[in-house]
Length: 263
Image 1 (tube, rainbow, N blue to C red):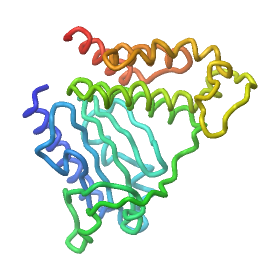
Image 2 (image 1 turned 90 degrees about the vertical axis):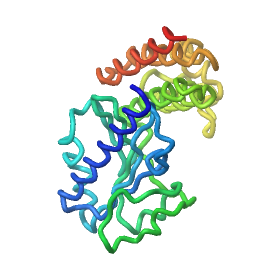
Image 3 (image 1 turned 30 degrees about the vertical axis):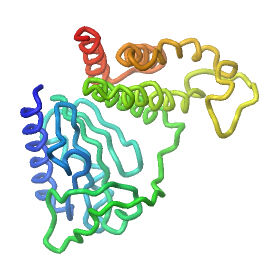
Image 4 (image 1 turned 135 degrees about the vertical axis):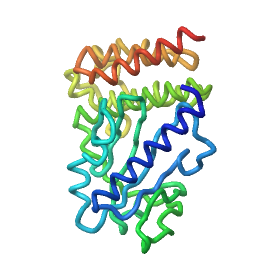
């Protein structure tokens, strides 16, 4: 998809999300971050990164019932990656990374400067200013569906970075972040051998502790130039233990193969 077409498509989808939220009557504002806060940066690999500011007492309903998103276009995959945030894919390739908060919570999470997409007239515009405080509560790391979801989205984002030529960032997303999420749920994938486990660094003595998983690591960590190959190996590994969402598997495998083919 070319740069201009993707930019138009993203902004149109964002407008539809804004309209849907306004129609729900449960939101105060929609704030965009990243490339949708700095529109000039949008390219064919951008996503929609945003915060929904819920009206007092409506946050739980907006989290539990996301028909304000699912009603807009066909959905491929989504999951709750923190207690009040989703990672969400539409079937047409638009990826959303968003949270749902009330106004008094916004300053309690770290974020860069945002842009108001829509707000009620009396909304506090200063909430768009950057913050650096972090007390965001992450969902239990023993939730395998979350860890696999984080693995898959890290791989996808990494492939987008690789396609842009951001190979360092791609390497870190695919061969560090994605792998870290797999390591976090190792105990749910294989039996751990009792061998001097380090409470602070899960990778220490990993080969001794999880030998059956460790044999897969060389293919999943192939290096700077082999991010697409590493991505394919990660999918192959995950599929050995867990049923992958078909949409995500197809998206990642096709993307990685296209990158390899077009070198």
